[in-house]
Length: 114
Image (cartoon, rainbow, N blue to C red):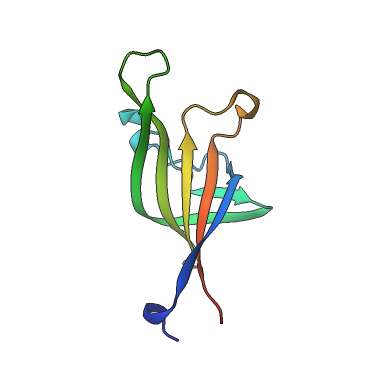
C-alpha cells in the first residue's frame, strides 16, 4: 500500500511532554506566543520536530466576567523525524498541581494495520 493510499487514525494520548533544554524556536516568542520545542521527550524517547504542518489557538471566556476572550492553548500539528504527525499544545493556564507541565502531546496520527 502506498503512503497516499494508506489509512490513518488519530490515537488520543493526552500526556505531558518534556521539551529538551535550549531547543525552542524563539522566532514567535516576540509576538507573545510560546517557543515551540524543536526536540522533546515522551515516554523516554526523544523526538525531533521536522516541520510544523499547522498551528492554531483555542480561546475561552474571561473567568472574571469581563466578556474578553483569552488564548487558552497554542496548538501545533507537527511532523517529527520519521514522518509521524503529532498534535501538541502549550497550555497557557495549567492546573495548579501541574504548573510545570505546560506542553502536552494530544494525539498521534497512526497508520492503520489490517
